[in-house]
Length: 398
Image (cartoon, rainbow, N blue to C red):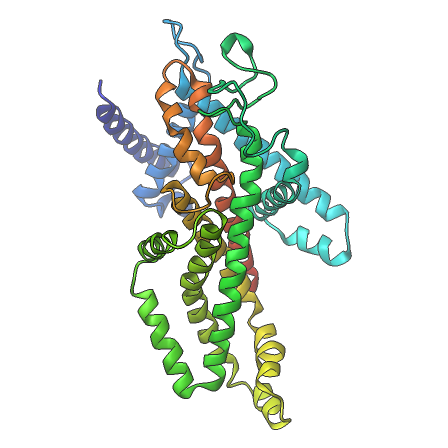
């Protein structure tokens, strides 16, 4: 039976089981409102969820080696994903439990109100930050150091083509993948963080300036931002970085990339800062500050900025994710962080050839997934924290 027929059979069976389950529950409970008013789509969703869970459990216990002796890469990767999910869930729960017991009264209260997803996000961000700051101490080798052995399989088992000195193996030219992953946190995350800071300083300052002064300054800045936002950001970045590559190279091109992305991304920050600032400048305390004779810097940094912190912090997390993914995409295309600096986007591109060996060497095929997984994990973690911050700033309750 083809895969499509299996999918159709699964959906049809779930629909039938959902309808029968809802009917049986209505009869068994005397037509209680919770079952009487339940739509068929909800019953179908419950049945489909149970079916998918049972299918996942069945697939998890499938053998990792087929009868022909070839490794079952799909089962192996699925088991790793399940172990990682439950491992991070337990770690996040323990981290939240520790935060509720240690620290100041304010921090303990914060952890008591924190959902598990936010605790997971904060834990991952802390791990990434420590890795980026202490990359030179954590990495066993240099990020540009080349060894004689290339294409070493991860795992460290010599019988399978591994080497204990290189737990995650080496790439095509003999560089240690573990060391490059660690330095990739320092370069990719650090550069993305610096780029986001520049974008927020530029966009936030100009946005508050436009909201405070109004008039021709507001029109000039707003129309300039409209022109920049009319061009797709990734295409515009590619164009400007390609032009910059004709003038600079190496580390200079990385600096040019940071400035280009910061300017382009500051347009989104400008829109938010201007909108928030417009709502604040009409408040009575702003008028009182103007009557006291306070200058423009005082109004922006002492009156407007403190009252706009919550939406700006939430936007900072979202902007960081977009900048982080943009830098990874540019590096994947060869125009981002330049060698010999390690970068996760470049690693995905360079190591993508290992996927061809998934059929008989699943460990080798997992190499490009490590960098891609590092990108995805940080993006999910930051979004979890941003969602929690948005919920807190909006005053919504769980």
